[in-house]
Length: 196
Image 1 (tube, one colour):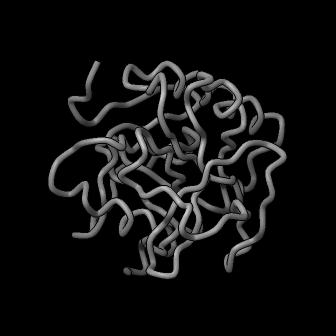
Image 2: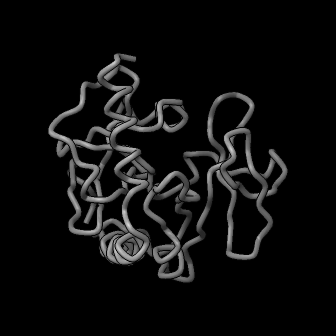
């Protein structure tokens, strides 16, 4: 990882944490509208979000606005370096993982695989308008969705963040998985020819 990528990540995280609470709440509500009106938003099935930490944009408004036939899931760290996904509703038990991020309390054998999902809202630190995302640097999402390198297919990968997290360009690594779309509080950008 280059020093430029590290310093960019540090700067963007610092700026993201500095967003005032009132702006953060309004942005999360506007983001929910963007996600709910994506032309490929599933009317049923499984979607995954994340538990917002470190100033990430929240997904609670999106979760609460999902159709009744859509099951919301949160990521769970697996021992093999990949993410599994567990259905979660407000009030269900959570426990902090090794990074201090809350995840559902569930048996490892009951986790959904990435291929069981229809759409995933991925957290990001920064993004470029060509569909590349800068994450936290652990590679969890890139490893989990590496099968998407071959051809775009569900689950659709939608990066989510604040509009202020957009950067002019990102140097990409061979393992980086490209997004299908990006949603922020102002707009949705589509990067692939996705189904209507």
